[in-house]
Image 1 (tube, rainbow, N blue to C red):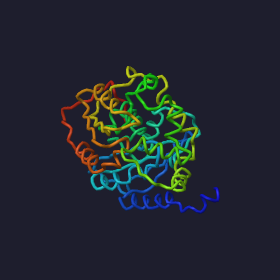
Image 2: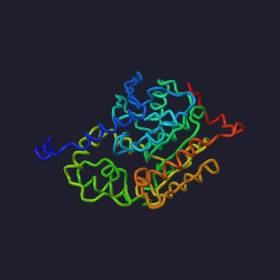
Image 3: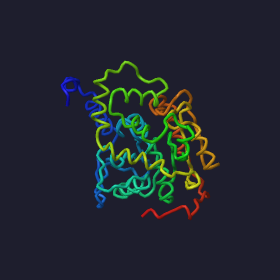
Image 4: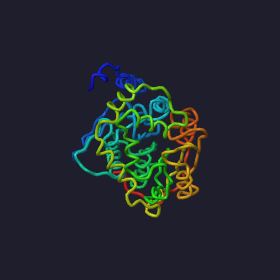
Length: 319
């Protein structure tokens, strides 16, 4: 660490400790599962699972760790649900010797850590990249995943969208340089894309401290994950999931433009509900948390008609 960084108090480390304590106060504990194939998955799980409550899995995206991304959502949901918060592979404390980059691999890993906790039925909530993983879980494990929430995740994007300038970046490599910032200037650029009103006046030492804690590990592996998202991606190849689905977006999202929310709604049809939160960007979870949480809780607690059947050809067994 440089001399300048050594003089700067690590706000990020201090904040991580506070958030771990907050998760613990919300009734969660850390849990790790060795999947036996070179992959170790870390997950926050209930200290005591209440069988009368629904299970909900919160799946993070790129950027800050799951503690930061769901710091307000966990205490909001914990009194009503059994909440599980996994670290995806190459994030937080989840690691793998395998070199698989697809969201379907991430989905299988999350599913297996749920199996390790004897969770058979669940709702999944995916934020940004986590939305790709949540969608894949719903497609692969339809009998286990009962409800799906996709938050600002461009699962309907196509590789050609980059060339056709749907995004403010020209290619995946440029996107990776922003989504995986390694300098204070790049971090400021990322915040400009993420927030409608990005915080101003943050000192470089604070941003560099955040980068050291959050963005310095597994950079090449995370770039591969980003490349895999767009490579050869076509809407015609995207399975149409049949679970009730809530799509939530910020109307001014610059990472995944709101056109992708409308595209996903058209793809899923009447089975999906679209909520667009005004005057927010990609970080609507933090910009208007109360509005997001109101929609989230209402959707997750909504009763499903006993006559509603999910097409069997979309399902795999839970086990």
